[in-house]
Structure formats: structure tokens, C-alpha cells
Length: 312
Picture 1 (cartoon, helix red, strand yellow):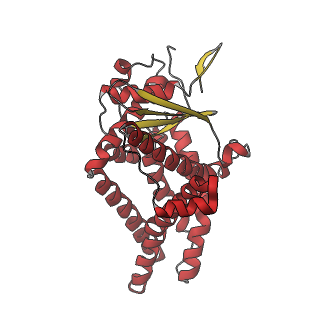
Picture 2 (cartoon, helix red, strand yellow):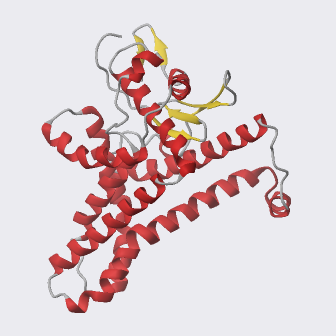
Picture 3 (cartoon, helix red, strand yellow):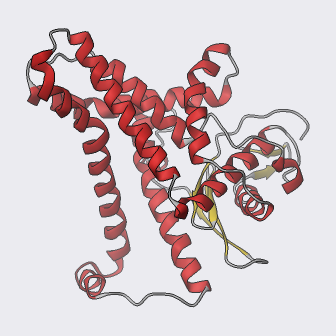
């Protein structure tokens, strides 16, 4: 591998680990001791893969967001449980979990997983999407210009998002997760550069990557500002319903932009990517070598080796 190569592989930082998602497989690598990295592999599942929607623009982005949230929660849960087990701290099921198991039996974990994702979506939509709409609706009688109202709503939405990221970045518990986030990006950069996947090679790359969830969310905020400006302010109910109905379109457009940003080095894409990259300075931290080892192990396990070399 001696030249730059694009990859669609993406990942997520976990608790003492990294998840990497390729086109066909998912690999979760978790450091369970100073000398041991546990790796779990499984085939890619989800709505997009199941119904072969990868080549349908916009729709694939909206559904991929849901798939990513489900996979993310499942991977985080697995890493936490694995660490607890490795330290001999596995918790016994509480009464509520036992109650759920009596009702749902072997599907209990899936029920808990999808309920967690549902709650996360509801909270995110409420805080970042509908919250600014209600705030601006409460003061719109003082503002005559629809343009100003739309700009104000978008500014409030973006401010809430930035404040949220800043507050999360201050949590001590998140520091190591953000280091693994940085390790994930460095490993992917190393592979994309065509260099051998080693700690030494990965170490020299930046922790900021254009195809990142932080950048994606920033683009969602900017796209929503443009799309929502198409709806007037005459009726609050219509305004709220329109936001909910337009969310899949916004997610789809944002996905296509982030996908293009990962492949293109054009000046326009660099400008589009820049704010999201700056936001990543809050959500990524320089990793140590042991964290890079974990990210590299996860990445190696989703790469496909064939006669033409390593790809995908």
C-alpha cells in the first residue's frame, strides 16, 4: 500500500475500546487488560444492509443514522459489560430486568436496546430540533421578519449543540473515550494514506477526520437551518409537524455531504468540513500507544484481503 486510498470504514469510540464498521463486517476491540485486547466480529446488519439500500441517495442516509445509533448503543453496552466481567464486577440482573425477561424472554436485550435508542432520538429531537422552535415561537410577536426568525432559530439550535459538546467535553469520564475517538481517526487516516497499520505510523496523523459523527451533527444543524427556512411561522403546529417530517430529508442530505467530504479534497469541501473539524477539537484527544493498538486491531479486523490487496 503506497498511495492514498478512500475507505468507507467508520467507527466509534467505546469504553476502553473502538468499534469499526466495514461494508460487510463489524469489529469491536476492547482492552481488557494491559496485555490483552478482546475482539468481537459480527456481520453488518441493519435496515440499509438488509434491504440493500446502500445505493439510494438520501434514503440511505436517513436510515443509516438509525442503524448507527442502534449499533452504537449495542457496542457501548458490550464494551461496558466486557470490562465489568474482566474485572469480576458483573452485575446481577435487578428486579426490573427480571420482570422484562419474564415478558420478552430471549428478546429482552433487543427490547432494551431499541427502547434506549428510541429515548435518545426523542430527547435529541426535543432538545435540538423542537426546543429552538418553541423558544422563537414565544418571542416571534416582537419580530416581523421571517428571515430574522429563521436565522434566530438556527442560531439558537447551533448554540445549544455547541454548548452541549463543550459541557460533555468537560466531563472527566469522557476523557478516555475521546482519546479512543482520536485513536479511531488516526488509524483510519493511516490506512487511507496507504501506510502500514502500525502504532508508529498512526501516531503522526491528526485526530480530526471529515467523516466523523461530530462533523455530521454540525452539518445537520446547518442543513436544518436552510431547510426549515422554507416553512413559514404562521402556525406553530404546522411548524412543529414540518420539522418532524423534514428530519429524514435533512439527515439524508447531511449524510451525502459528509460522504462527499470524506472523498473530496476540493476547496469547497474543505470549507464545508472546516467547522466540523474544529468541533472535533472538543471531542477528540491525542491517544496513547495502547489506545492506538486497540483502534488498529479493530480496523484490521474489518479490512478485506484479496488478490488486489486490502480494500473496503
